[in-house]
Image 1 (tube, rainbow, N blue to C red):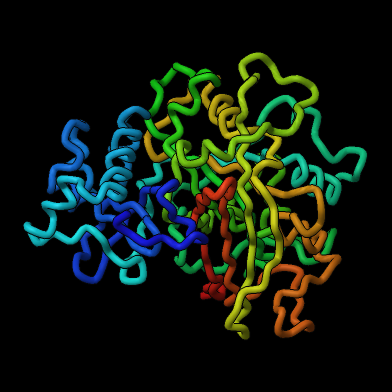
Image 2 (image 1 turned 45 degrees about the horizontal axis):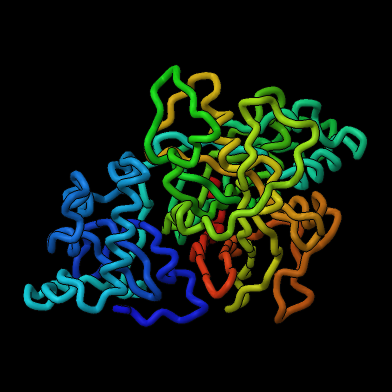
Length: 421
């Protein structure tokens, strides 16, 4: 093994996620694969001939996005990933032996690197696929007896988001300005969001696309999914509450969405497949899927207030709670003939579990401000109902089974004060 990988690393040989990075010695963004605490520079390996036989990947490895590679077939994705695995594990690999002679260094320290968006996000859709989250929010605003709308159990509910404000982890998020109602019955006022929130989500990145007018069959859906990332769909709850009738979220969502930089493939996640929750009533035929389509991915939300140097855990959830699967979301999105393109982003919606400590937003944790949440283990009197300026939110996720660990790294963002002028 070329790299010594700690057993608790997110980036084991079983993972090999793809991303776009640059470093102090080469500031050109290019394709890399995370392994342990290092990055394997695929441009270096392509120059050494590792990917001969895989179309134009050698040229794409130096590009500043994964879009072209995403547009390949799943067979080609697997070929590249297999070549990387063999390079790392085979001590007598010809390319490994040749690299020192050419003065090429294939490994770069993650600590010396800057991560970029993994691809150009062409379009972004966010679903509302957690029954627990939808029930919690519905109960807050419509009452327990009318928590889920009549259509919710028949189709994955989604809306189109803003692709231009999708950013990579560690990008600051400015508190948005907008209209909000301070007291029921009074006219709205313009000012900074007063109910700033995170949403614990995951998202799939589309691989090869489908033609306009065609639809993706659920049995083929995985062939169109390049991989999965963590996602924080930042939300301005007071702005959203005033604006969302009748067309849904707008300014309450479009100011920033953060994703993690490393794209974990479905092949890496395959050992962690589980059944999704029982769907009752049975979905219509085009959404029916007899295969395992959920994933046992442990998810954690942590907060670091401005006054603290350490993170405090807010919530722990799991993707396996998701009512509608990734395959069902993608299938439903295209059932009317909508065309997908490489790099399109599809969010799951907030991933909440069955208990209060597994809720995926401050809206739920504080029950819309009725409960104060401790955000600092070092100071039990530091409470929040929603997020303050300079709070930093970190999402993390990993799978672990039979000695195999596959993780996503972190998805981090800090809230900056609103620009009032």
